Image (tube, rainbow, N blue to C red; front, side):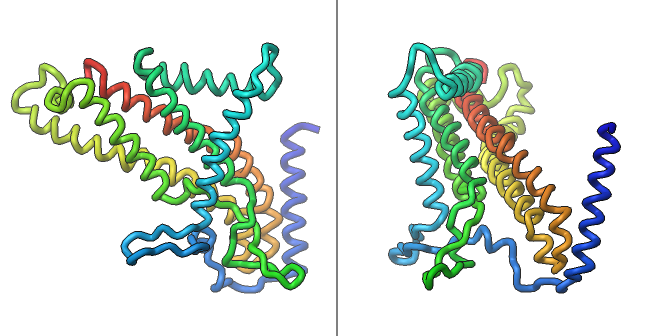
Length: 300
């Protein structure tokens, strides 16, 4: 049987099951009470709001950040203390990841002297974002809005959430990178030469001011592009999984849709956890290295 026939047969079977389930369950009507945005709402577990100016409450986002930091430090310490002359599979994978961070991301965008200085920063960025993205696809009992009763005790239900799906987290990391590369450029060249370097040498006099203004805008746009790229990709991935995994069927009140959307949700889940989680960490770390390398380069 050819692949085409297998695919068509699978689609026919899937469609047939959908019709059968729809005939049995029918439609419950549109669900006005279900709000997908609630899955990303941060409820204060431990309220800390001194004076009302700054909210430092402990939420599930704080938990995910703590787990990501713990995994970033713990995984590297675990492997570093168990290095062998004949590496096992875990050590081989870690060494490959180390080579990617050191040679491709860091050394590929700055000279060796600078790479040695900034590699711990770039490597930590990559690992922290990578772990933050990965654990975002692990169901954890963090949904306190919808609880389940077990032996008379109300417990939070399992849910998917990622700290990087909250714009505040990518934004803060981006601001750290933004200040880091600008400070590095100023320390390497001095404030005035660094600012002058924003205008290419030999630019015609009448174009100096417009070019400078465009360059200033581009530096601030980096804050938006770097943070929103990470935030939007992770948030969109979680929303797709939420809708295809049952959210769409609940919203429309048509349970039969789950037969079609569930396989799609599994596909989205595998795509996100295998590719997007790593790709977004790689892009963020690479752009950070490019900005750092460009800030201190002679031709900036």
